[in-house]
Length: 315
Image (cartoon, rainbow, N blue to C red; front, side):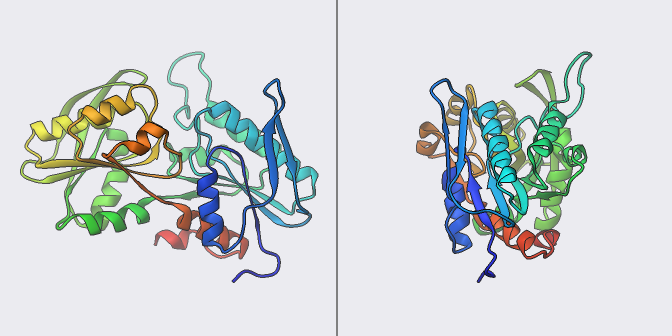
């Protein structure tokens, strides 16, 4: 049970079901806040209870529509700061603009850093996120940053679903560290897909490094956006002799042609988390299964509020 000075959990409109699940895990109710829009589209926020001196957690995934949800998060935090909140913790299960973490060409922005600066300016005292696309984003902040991982949620499910450890496959060279971590914990083998990207959201599979023939293959990634990487990867793994292919991706962004690709792909199953809410079509897709990170986020909130170790969750 919580102490008398229990934290308050507020939410924008990006993922209210997740916030309700987090509150249920903590045996409390979401904080009272009216988050809406004026007739011209401007974000309007009014906090509906006393927050003076209290730890306030604002849970908001910056998913589609990304810019609107970022603005909601900023305005909520500004409202809390002007209401004398004790500590404001921005909990961003999915960190939008995470792929723009460096200059990839001349005269381009580093938008991940811009978002970090805006969050700090709006009043965030701490930031929490799950499976950043690039770990170095933590260094864009001059305030504490807790980087959580969905791995414990995925690993428990994998152990229940597979009779023997599947070969863990990284869909590109950049995800090798993540795949190796899963492979180590499952005591399984590792493979890497050598992928070349000719343009944003366009990829072409070139080769598979590692042995997959005669084995179940498990693709792991931090997100699935247009699903080109996963579906092409699944096909090439089957072409190399894998018996079946399952994918685990933390953030189900699922934009553009993603659903058409998944439904027509040889993927046996795509397992995601509820960091990003699924649209109606994705909810109805039999190939997609959702695992909840509400207990993980709820436990992180409890530990931050009680000043316990968060990293101990991943030992």
